[in-house]
Structures are given as structure tokens and as C-alpha cells.
Amino acid sequence: MAKDLQCVLLLDCYGDLLTERQRELAELYYNEDLTLSEIADIQKISRQAVLDSLRHSEQMLRHAEEKLGMAQRIGKLRHCLEDILAAAQGQPDTETIRTLAQQGLELL
Image 1 (cartoon, rainbow, N blue to C red):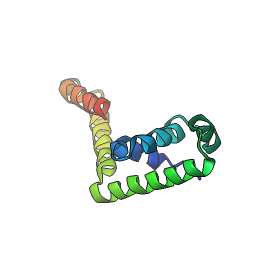
Image 2: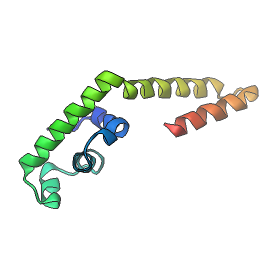
Image 3: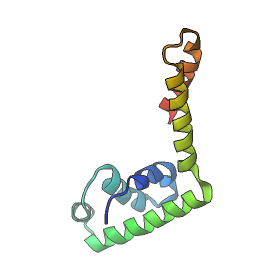
Image 4: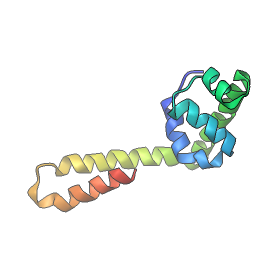
């Protein structure tokens, strides 16, 4: 199972839709970068149970993104804020715009 950057983003957006156990396993795998075997050892479950849980969680996260599109919207918002910030660089009369764009990026 190859780790997918999109799953990290989806976990950030929709992780609360997973059960506590699913979220814990997904965070260990995607955020802590542990292997299936390492997670299995820590959780005292089989490697196959970890894999099954991750596949199911990934499917649920992708389904939520299909229906809601929040990760895509956040990506577009981030891009817009970065463009605003870049356009405002070096412009002395746009300090407010720079500040707001920076604050928006920090919120993401």
C-alpha cells in the first residue's frame, strides 16, 4: 500500500468522520510514517487488520471528498491567498492585503 499525500490532506479535512480507532491507525500510518508492521506491533493486532482498516478509512475519506469537496476548496483557497500575497509583495500601500493574506494562509 503506497502512501498517498492526498490521504494526508483528506485525513486533515475529514478525520473526524472516522471512528477513533480508524483515525488513530490512519494518523500512525500517514502522519507518523509508521509501517503496517510497526502499527500492528504497537496496536497488538495483525498487519492485515491494519491494512483492512486503512483501506476502509481511505475509501470513506475519498467518498467524503467526492460528496463535499472541502479539500479541493481548501487547496484553491490556499492558491488564491498565495497569489494575493505574491502580488502584494513590494507594494507599500498594500500592507493590509499582505497581512490579511498571511493570516488566511496561517488559518489553513
